[in-house]
Image (cartoon, rainbow, N blue to C red):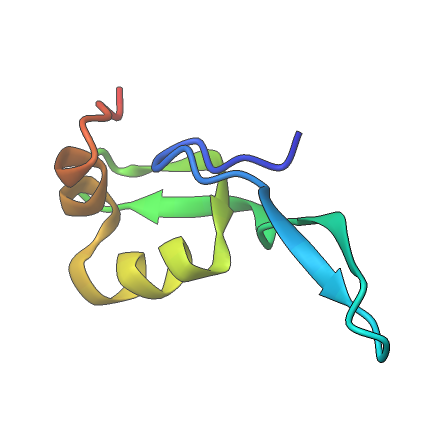
Length: 75
């Protein structure tokens, strides 16, 4: 399943709306990427499945701080 390992974000229910306004259920998947991220505090790479939104925030505040905010320990 497409799921972020840090935040736990996963697919959501959504609706397709046709021209005749008939609504049908569909899945709206998150954009999950498998990435090796460098952690300077640990001095090594960490492989994680993260969303692209997670990656943008990790670039701004750092992986250790982001993981701490979401209650995940990097060991």
